[in-house]
Length: 376
Ligand code: FA5
Ligand code: MG
Image 1 (cartoon, helix red, strand yellow):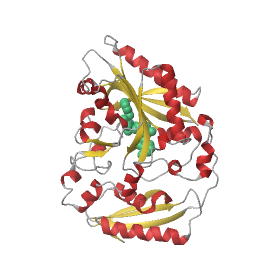
Image 2 (tube, rainbow, N blue to C red; image 1 turned 135 degrees about the horizontal axis):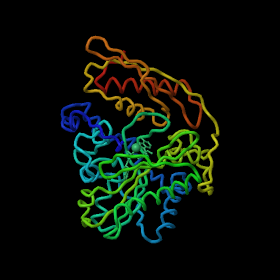
Image 3 (tube, rainbow, N blue to C red; image 1 turned 30 degrees about the vertical axis):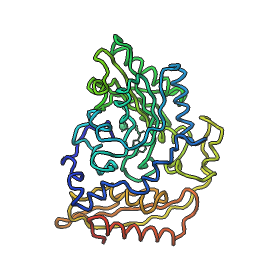
Image 4 (cartoon, rainbow, N blue to C red; image 1 turned 60 degrees about the vertical axis):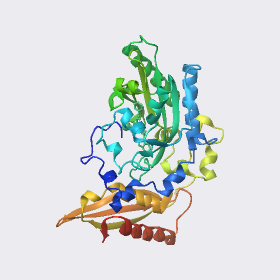
């Protein structure tokens, strides 16, 4: 998301119209199902695979730099737009600021979309090396690799004045290729050029995994303006990196669906007990999927965003929805017709038709009552 440099055309439209426009106010609020996740702290839960991965990353950093980094893993997820965006030079019209992509609590606070949101306050508090882990929130599509809550490890390190930018860049790359090696073993990896508003230069590390290049993390030298906002003096340089834990864990442990990290089922959790990084997940069963389509007319396209449908599906169906995708679209007159296919599947049991129909009907009701569309 942050590596995307494109911007939304109207700046902050839904924020401006939140009080008057019902759709915009629906976008502005944080659904109860998302609030409920803010207390889960999966990355601190004993034997949870995300906790195992966090500890493995922390151990690597501790071993490489003994008593250098401060660890923070319980920073609260509500931050200000200043922390999340302004301090990090994210431009005003950037997609990551849009209420269609981000959960706003009110006009100036939101659920953090990345852990980097804490960097400037920690630098301003005088910290010179820190490793953060926590839950981050993004409105996104429904499929096996996306979830509106996921976890990131994020780190920053300042260097003694006089250290050259070249040395800082070398330290960053060496630290991170060592980390990738500690996680993935002796695999092929490559650095690709990246773009983040808060680092320059920026890089992404990819590792070869099952025949494909997998993006593992984003990183770079902290931008001078970001350092200045953290009160860091002009002769000091620093690096930063950030990585998503779920996708790493899916690859490392062989977890096929991101929803499983939220499972309370012992047939999932039990497979990670006391096995550390060596654990490999064996699916206990694959339950049948049920597909249902829902079609509707959108009269005013500017008031509709695909993420609204994805979010509503999650709100109504919880983790029983596996996938939501557009399967048909056509225009007639000034209106747009859309057909979405909803795949229902539980990770834990076979759903009955009655259960699926109840969810499907509630989903249709919610669409017609809360979105500016007309069901067909
Ligand atoms: C960032 O969030 C930057 N803050 C990273 C960074 C930190 C760069 C410090 C430089 C310096 P990005 O938006 O690409 O970058 O997200 C990082 C990772 O989060 C991705 O590589 C991916 O693994 C993961 N991710 C993104 N969206 C989702 C999602 N919906 N579900 C699960 N994981 C996701
Ligand atoms: Mg990215």
